[in-house]
Image (cartoon, rainbow, N blue to C red; front, side):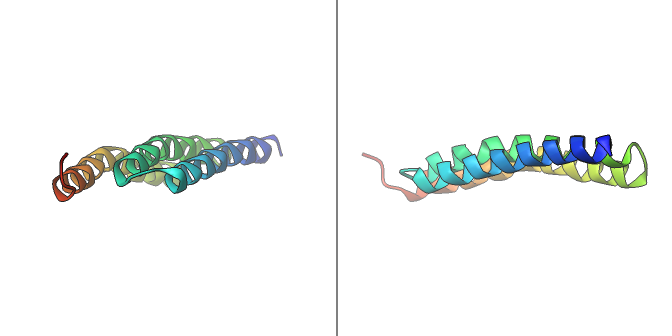
Length: 95
């Protein structure tokens, strides 16, 4: 029972980060600022997901699969974010 409560607390924290990031994206003045708000979520949510899975099921096959998937997300996220930012920077006229 304690593991389920701990997992629920971690997932609520993850949901709070996602909600704050979504609000930041909605209030952003331009696309680069929105991408900056998304960066916080793309790092914290995978880490909190790993913690929630490890707390709930322990180290096992599903935890190893989740960790490997999250590592791919953490490695690919910054590359994708920089590609989007570069495209947006080239698309907008400079003053």
